[in-house]
Length: 435
Image (cartoon, rainbow, N blue to C red; front, side, top):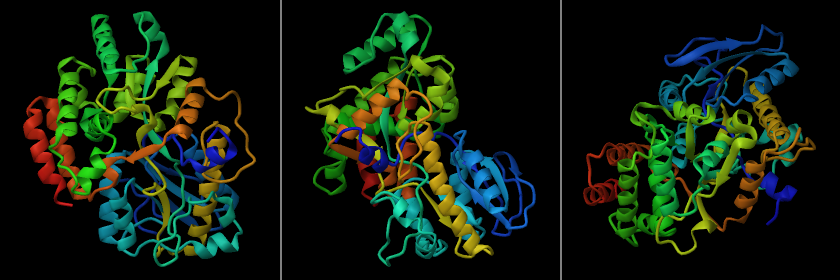
């Protein structure tokens, strides 16, 4: 598949990297501030009603788009900024207490999605999509119908996958090229350390960035290992998992990550990279939205290197597709139910337009064109994404939330040096069998 409109519009993209939460507790339109937020805000009172919206991303276009739709609908909108990790807890508490806002975002993964649907708190959106004539605006597969035939969520964040981004200027100063093999990666890490440059920015405090590096190392050992282990065809203690753990331990011993990385959040690690203080970052394609304006032409990108025994490593990747999507939901008990549903549909499509303006992949049809030249690194990423024959869903999005938390705690021990690979895989196998 080439970079046609079909590809661009069938990806659920890339660029959303931290945490905007437009919020207030309950569905009454109140504007309370939750612990861990950076402050709440909202537009001025309107005649059309009042809505609350929760999300967890902070890309620059999300807030203006929400305010634009609120202005068009003549409604008051209240919101807050909330860290992604805080958001996970907040949304769970809100579900348990039946205090969800009018419109809210779901964090990634099958288990998170099911928690919303099983609680029966999401309103079906079929009627609004049909009455507004906007259902056909979304690309095939982007509106997920559940077993009861209802559509409960709307996309706002496109498909995404794993990558290695680097600072071209720093790489050039070191006299090296972006790594494509394990040996090249280790040599670059040594060269960066010798010059006092942080080799790889990593937010170890949040655990999931480190977990995904391990997941990716397993994929590079054997692209089918995780699926086979999940299906009981092999053990999580088998060779691909051991070899991947050994390589991660080797990275830690080589000082591959910035000093104090276990105390840094993912957002802090990203800022280190955006600010030109780290040579590389191993993260998701969601970083492009802020890496592009921060680094411009100095932003480089390559596929994750060949680090293991997988014979055809560059045809596969870790990622997130529409089978376990991020989505917008409407509270079934909203006091402004019809208004909330209309807002959610219009907001989803307006975000899609913003992605198109930025030259990013979209999930719905639009006539909006990119404003300016598409970043070279991002254009190459899109081309590469179109050619992957296999995308392994991030592990954490395929297992129950409780199992995922336990596995992340275990994975963290590889980074602290407190657990050898042989013990790690045995413990991981036991945890994963709880599914």
